[in-house]
Every structure is written in C-alpha cells, then in structure tokens.
Image (cartoon, rainbow, N blue to C red; front, side, top):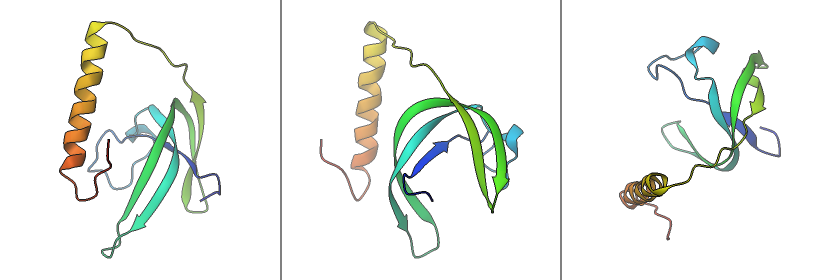
Length: 108
C-alpha cells in the first residue's frame, strides 16, 4: 500500500461473489484514507477508514496482484430541510447504537 494510504471503496452487487468482475461492482463509491489495519489471528484483516469524497468508477485494471482504478470525483450536493435533518439524526443514533454493541467503542 502506498504511503499516502488513499483507497477507493466500492460495494459489490452480490456480496456472495468471491471474485467480482467490473460488471459485478456498483459504479459509485467513496475515496478513503486508511487509518488502521488490524490483522486477526484467523487471518482476516479489519480496516478502519475515513471517507473523503464520493467518486465514480471509470476504469478498473489489475496490476501486480491488486486492482487499480481510475475514478471521477463527484460534485458534493447539499441537501437541506426538516426531512434531511431527521434522517441525519436517525443515522447518527443508529451508528452510536451499533458502536455501543461492539467491544471497542469510541466516546462521543
């Protein structure tokens, strides 16, 4: 991984697919900075990331055993209104509820 630790995250259309091709991925994802890597005894890796900006996957290629992408940063749209505020409050509450069920929980 490069020293800057910048990555592009995009979800799979079918999470059960073990080796997804380009057409198996959503087009829109998020650029992120890797904050922490944790290698667990069972061989899995947990990654803590900080999202930066929404992006669109333009091109995907493989090089040296890993994927490289060309992305287009998407313009940020600001939504306003009572309904948006309610959705934001709900999302924050659900996030904190989810974190509180985990062993290592950040403080507010």
